Image 1 (cartoon, one colour):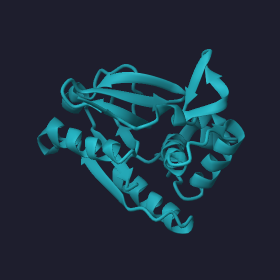
Image 2 (tube, rainbow, N blue to C red):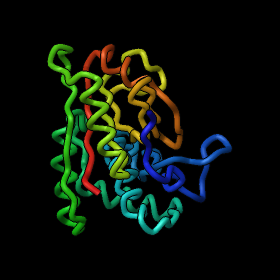
Image 3 (tube, one colour):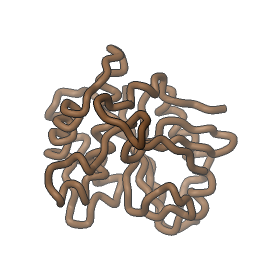
Length: 202
């Protein structure tokens, strides 16, 4: 059964598009400096998730200038290291600082997918975690350190997970304006370096 955020259209950023269609979520290329554009997948993903959560009850749309301002605000707290943000624990700690500073009373959870296959949670556990988040209408931040043959996914990269079919493993991913589907069950088995997930309480 497919479980999704309640209003996928709220993840669309108005005033721009992607290849002639809707532009989903933020885009790290919108940052003003080369460093931020190159390393900004983590803060961009957190901006996408928090923007949705802030507007989910009101149903308000967001235009690109306001979204970019939100991205820059998030960067102050979810600031990458020289190696990016390749650990779920790094992003979780930074998001906790963000929500404390912005009086956004939420708790943050994480599910790590270690590099060693025998230490990873199985697909059922991952699906349970993601389903719990999506049922609360919370998009999930997804860290992919190695795409495991899922060519749509970039390596060493954060994206936003918006839906999951727990039977087939099909997951809808948002990255750089695109909405596309991957096989999360296959990724979990075949990724070389792992990754993980973080989410907030609604």
